[in-house]
Length: 179
Image 1 (cartoon, rainbow, N blue to C red):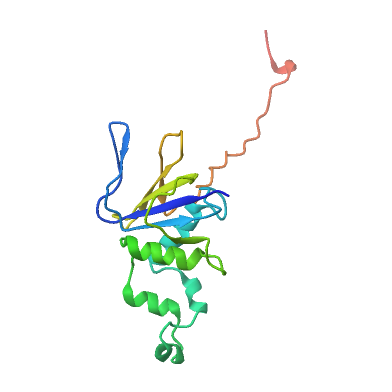
Image 2 (cartoon, rainbow, N blue to C red; image 1 turned 180 degrees about the horizontal axis):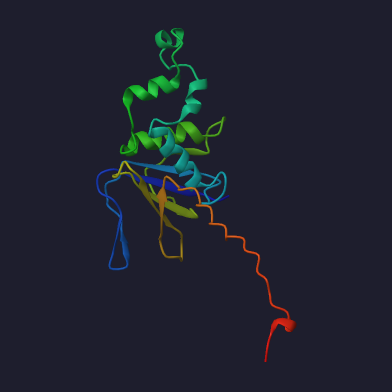
């Protein structure tokens, strides 16, 4: 079980000062995830935060397969994607982000991801998500015994490495060498 907590800050952000991470007292929301709280991988927290950022930016077209949450509009053929466009981007609202995270990633039977008021003592990772900049989030990862690590969301896809220009090198044989 890799337990974690995810904290969203939307007024004052965590900052690194003189080599120490300063964490503001006031946060917008705190989530506890009972399992699978590791940062990397297809289902890692960083990828989930990336998906959350994409959804809150109003660009998640996968919402087109779901009906509008209000029955009147659903009957008119509108989708959840149309509903998300009404409110516009919500990337700078920590409470909204936490609620949407739970909606997106809670297991069908519940109990895996939920709101928490305290910091649990048995967590492997603590994520501090700074949502004060709607163009991109900063995510501090705190792990016992390690220095805090800073990541950015949205995660930029890796840039392809430029291919070396293929050259046909012709090596001179010993007969072409003159002494």
